[in-house]
Length: 637
Ligand code: PRX
View (tube, helix red, strand yellow):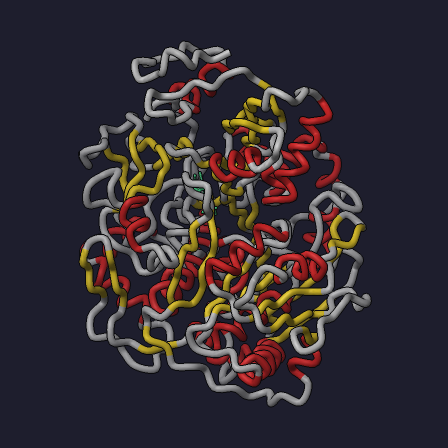
């Protein structure tokens, strides 16, 4: 728990109650009753939720729990795409809009559920024709557009599993992820618009695939319609893949525990880990949380501003909303381009009802000034959501007042790539406390404990843990079962430790304080300090590097690097710029250190481990605390 500034965040905030009309009409109007019922018998509760979905074969038991490995719904067979798409076709939702998209340049596309099904099926048949199928990995490197979701669904339908890589990652990061998962095919786009410029996705793919022997096929969705280089035999357009393919396709029958996707996320080592999720358990978590947390009604237009390159897009753009038969809005491009009114104009023009975004965006808009949202009619909004990092009470209040007109509940949802779906949040009918995520979701046994697993008293910080398994929990780390156990199940014996510190108040509300490990949260995105350090030392001028997070007004946190340059190099502004660029090239722009400080030594333990804690304390001008393990030869500058 060292290094956490508890006092600064513990100031009690007044609860904000939702309007009685909202509570009355809510999907869950008595959250306490639902939580109490779920707590009585969580397994029976989850089985009851699961029975709202279609299964090809029912389960024998809700879960087999052999700590730390859980197998949800053993014996059951299903395919998540049946629940996300096919099962709506025999209902009135057949011609309801599933996806509505606006490109940065004003392009528009709408897919009804029936149209979505046809396109997914044609994609699925096209992939099958290439010999891609059960157990194969398909990497998806695309911008936010309906075809990104279609590519995911087509992959899952044929029993392959997807690995979506955020379009802002570099060729090297893409290459490493494809090699780790042994990707057989890559689906990308010719490019995308970002701030009026073209992002050349296909060119990045070409650079990455050059070093990926497993990739046999590259499929290019023509987002822009511009000419890109195509490699004969390896590359084809999405149109070529799907031309002449039947618009019907049978979903592969999957065991509940069969893999649906792998998604890479940062941990405390230099190598991102592939978090695995499966069809059966994941679908239950994503379905139930979307339904109750976002209070989805059939008349709603729902907008989650994430990208499916992150877990939020998987669970709350694609699978959760579609399983609920929702109409999902998607937008390409940056929030403040062509001007700071883009999002508010979208809300006005389309009549968005539910907006789910990240605190970093809220803080950015706060800084740009309320005159931008004030220009637009935002009265269609009825519910707001926040995800990715703690939302500071000031930003919460601004979001509530300026965007929500003082009347929309805000669900502050805590969860992780590993948890698959939301685990902690006040439900919309609960009182909301600014800055506090809220209560464990029904059926989730989350708490704050000390290192021995003892419950911390109210108001005392500790480890955020989950005691019992939950359906959408990760199925492991791709290719590394030991790392799964070591990373999540050893900090507190017998419990899932999230890597976050938290504190619970007298009402049971959990406030997340931040990470306890060497993971940064930059604008709601996870980055490992060691990943950035490895990228820095890969540069010939660098002897050693240490990275910490420093506070940033908009992004929450940004990387700062301490670098020891080799004797023969002259550290200075030129080298700093070169190193920042080199990190962007190796990982992506989000990992670029904001500041690089050249130093003569780094504080290390006697065994040579860098003590980032000391660098952080020094940065904040605090006392260095316990330095008994410090190597006396490595005094901080
Ligand atoms: O530190 C927590 C923070 O983001 C981490 C998970 O990051 P990732 O797997 O990339 O998933 C982000 C989107 C779910 C957590 O360990 N975090 C996420 N949501 C919140 C949060 N911290 C505080 N409040 C939240 N609502």
